[in-house]
Image 1 (cartoon, helix red, strand yellow):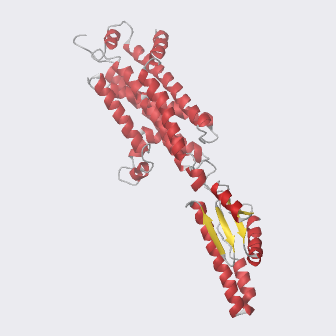
Image 2 (cartoon, helix red, strand yellow; image 1 turned 180 degrees about the vertical axis):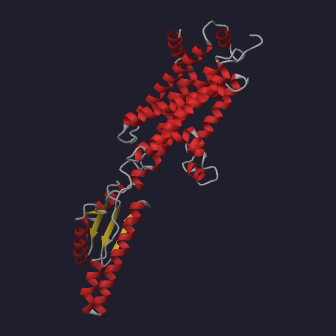
Image 3 (cartoon, helix red, strand yellow; image 1 turned 90 degrees about the vertical axis):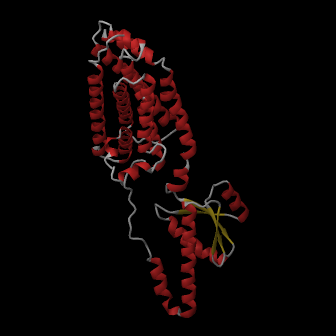
Length: 379
């Protein structure tokens, strides 16, 4: 009987319009909007890459000095700048096409033209300012006290940073990818609608189907468990579709532990379904009222995890309600994806997984206790 119920519960779930819309179509549409909105911000404005710069030499003497400095800088394996020598017309064309980030004009001193105001243009501005300052120091010293030229040149040459650049993580540090982690959490939380139907469709006072199940000779625990298992399978399918779309179509970097990403997504889906199950088991409210409760709680939890405002999770962590991030299912889901992508060890990830497993067990247990022994005076 369990197998029979399980089979037809899956077929029934796949025909539910809300599942198709909220768990498949909506996340695909929202994920596409996220990619359009945030896709290139990190690569263009935040992630460090060598700044390609056009150089227009208008002074032979100044050009010779600049070229010596440029060649020294470009020898570094992690060079901040790469220079392309060209004429003014071609330089402007490359700047317009975004082939270069700026144009340095070499005269008696350097001048700069940039197209946009971002991190890379700021780096160019600081370089030009520093170059002009050092050139002025050398020129003034040559005029006032030529004997000190050697010491000044040596001091400027040895002006190097003692800070070693070392990445804190080998993972993807794109801050905008947290929106896609939250998107997966949202898909999982909206799975609560499917879990809700398991509870309401087993209550005789809420639906005709529930009334028929209550008078059926099949043990109620068998019916509920088969319903839950079918819901988990459908939710797992939706989570797999969402992860596959994000990785293969949107090209979001989810790290190199893709099997664990899928496993985490499926586990997150189980959390969402079990949340809906426990909400549907509360009291004798109508099905529409419980639908509203389920949707509202899912959206609130997703909001607190950062789906609508990336900084809200940090604000909660810095408040007196910091504990809420550790019990908020959506926040725990996002933290698990983040930990997989950022940290080399599995400590924080395993903490999140354990939290989700405990949440599932608690929610299902509460739901069964509130639903299994419910009796009705009449149906």
